[in-house]
Image (cartoon, rainbow, N blue to C red; front, side, top):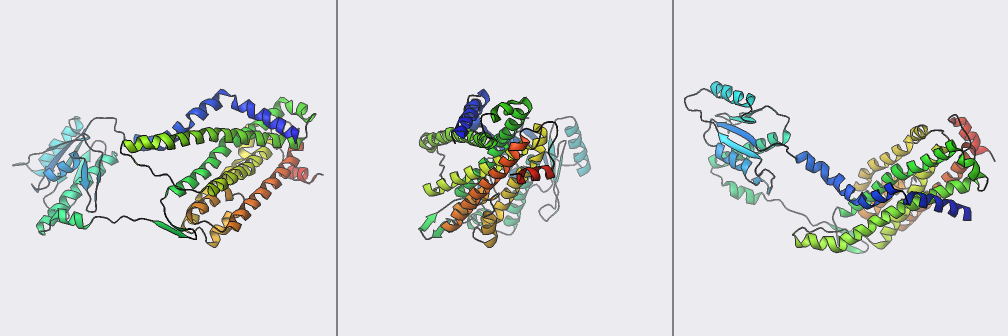
Length: 431
């Protein structure tokens, strides 16, 4: 046991002293936030100026309403008003058409688009209120945000015109159509509790952390094994420690590296909880954190550790059976597939967390670390199910460690070729 801890300590300090580990640990939370927000921000980013739009309104009734909808900061969709991001994004102007045919107007506007004088022009035909199609022309119709905004503005104007023709007050319809919002309350043996989707979000984060840990630190296990084989350092190490001690030391040491990183991020989250939420509330932004019991958090930690050991052991097995990191990565691809399948299974389990399907899937050790946290925060299963799933996962982890150790003790000294399935099976059976 002492040798395992010596090897684990070596693996641990070798990695936490690495400059890249320190940098990623410090900037990791910022990168996670940016990875979630940046795509949405970039997707809405308009690198150019305000879109120049000309509108030819044959009805003589819709232009002002369309212009106001595009240039204002709010719009009504018949159900509720919600914020828009169109302030300053559109420069809208009318097209005079008296004494000219529609074809002449089209020709003039099309030439303006070709010369770069305008970006889009809109034709509102005389019978658009009766159901005819409006037309939008532009050099870049792939600008779906602008096209969608124009369509929404035209729809608002046409619907309002139809209501006025029917002598219906549009503002009255909007107030009568205001949507009802729900307070969602969980009823359980502990009583009633108002909930939100944040609990599921936390459970999903646990599964995501397992996935990222396997991708990053599981690959580190594989690379370490392959590098030691290729450098022949392993021959020296085996002279003072058993193969099982070496493998367990690696697993324990690298798991502690992952926990150290998450502990630093956890401290950052707590500091944000204490100071950041108050600052956001003072600026008018209120964030509600999910209410999760300490016992559930303890379960999350246990499932995380067991899940890491299950998958990291498979990576160690892949490294012992191959001679290059590339071969090991290919052999370990099924590991990633198992995790991805687990994520896909989250959605039917979330809808019926206590169904027979959810119960059976959550007892499969390869899916347990992802599925069980979701069940715990949606509709908590009986305690015996939680403990049984945890016990089965622990037994599976121990069994995989035993199998991996038998492959490791032979494969760690194999050079020059990748082991075949019959060879690996023979190593496992070898006493």
